[in-house]
Length: 242
Image 1 (cartoon, one colour):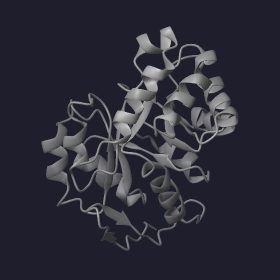
Image 2: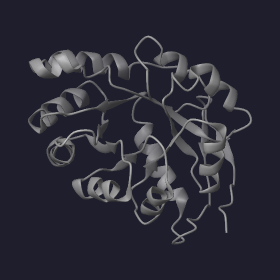
Image 3: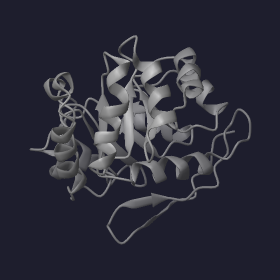
Image 4: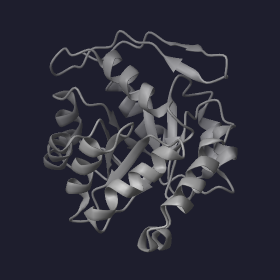
């Protein structure tokens, strides 16, 4: 039995909010609860930092710098051996931070990220194995999609908030804008090739809730321990509006 889409409402900012009585087809868990939980995270700020952490020792000061600048939701990607420990440290030691895990490719990584303390999970795409793992967890998944067909398939699974990846390479602002009418009700967090220069273009779209970007934590500033510089970049990003 496929989920029933109850529709959406427009909020005062022009963005669509999804309100659903959808139920997960595997365990009967309400998808609406996970959708609202995910939205509460993504609404914290216009930009979600996407981090590649090579040294777990930098995770806490980096996260504190980002939170101080107004970026509380932080995506730590599982692209390095230090990633899971970094998530643990941020989740346990950084007040105000909402630790999430990115580049989750399979069920094992999903479970490891949740165990480490992730409050949201992000994937560049989806597989049935990953969807099954998400269905068994109360931690929300932000699955990746790059085409209309992928979006439609995820909508049939009950997902209404998706990562658009890789954003610039997959068609950018104009492509995402073209999806807004035929796929009304679906919200996106575009990630990939987004910077301070083009973030506002994405944020101006009615089907974009936030963007993901790595520019707020440049590797050179992390290497120097320039946390004040990162806080400044974070504050600039937190002030962006569409």
